[in-house]
Image (tube, rainbow, N blue to C red; front, side, top):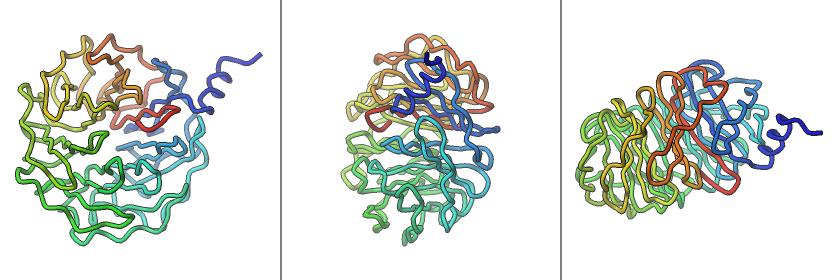
Length: 341
């Protein structure tokens, strides 16, 4: 007879969905099986991330999970088969300092880390191991790299950073091309997060001052900034994402209700009603499931992660995991058995 725990483990190994939360205190990363509710927390990696984790990313194939963090080596990557494998050897040339954001290309052939000191962005070929660091762009991001994103097609890379112009985008062919011209209307403050729509036809940035979210059409260059939503997010925009269909845009932010979601049709629709049970505090990370049927918010105080069924509106909050993340949730990612989240 197979135990419930063994059954969950086997199911996860076959590619069952999981939810991963990057957080401030040891073990710095918590992963749970996901079936529309939290399964039992998966055993920690044998070699933990070095310190407070800022961001988490999973390859589209689900073969590896990456965590960016505050102490050297600033990024840690693990094979993933429903459990953490032995930590991948560090890159020969480490990111220069605190890893604030990490992502893989959709094809899984590169990994990028946004970090706190020059050159502010480091990219490595990825073959299940770190390749030789790619040469820095000729025009560096202006300051601290807070987040990084590739277009879905992998032909551009965007870095959100701390000083003007706050966002830098480069053509990407396995190397950095010449920096794209800045948008005509710059974001007004440090960009904390950047995402492209699933179709790649718009780029969104969350930032520190009103209107807290800025979105631009994207055609390989910045289009005219989209009009602000009629109801702005309530405070500092910290994370942003689109639903898998591209039909909604979600912003995690610093003031109640801590999460704001809008219909998206190339413009902002009327803000969706807040969840009845709000996230407990500042929203630090937001993610949709691959199927788009749930939305998760990582936040500053217990339970550190809140998940809601999503039907174009927030439904009743999912019960907390039996074992909570250890502290402040800074990033969240889902991974399923059929593609990228």
